[in-house]
Length: 88
Image 1 (cartoon, one colour):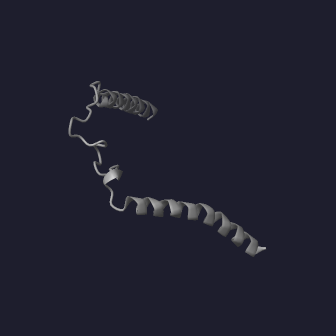
Image 2 (cartoon, helix red, strand yellow):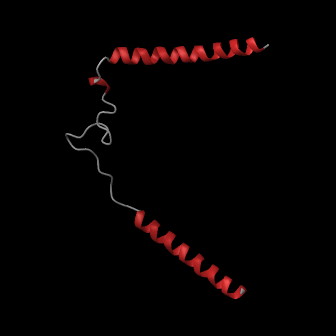
Image 3 (cartoon, one colour):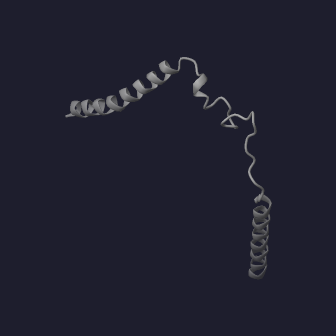
């Protein structure tokens, strides 16, 4: 019946809004964020992630990465032109 469907729509609409407002008030935190103390690493979530100074073979690694980036940056366009011209 249409009256039952209308009542059901109103019931679900009200409960969805109530649940949404409850979750918004639960997830809000007004406290100040905590910062690292004296012995905390620079990046707390992954302490060894950005510790570049103590990396082994740092010059070799970054040299290889920079060389690979330059090779890809120039190689892909040259290969694309060669491939396009070979199709003609």
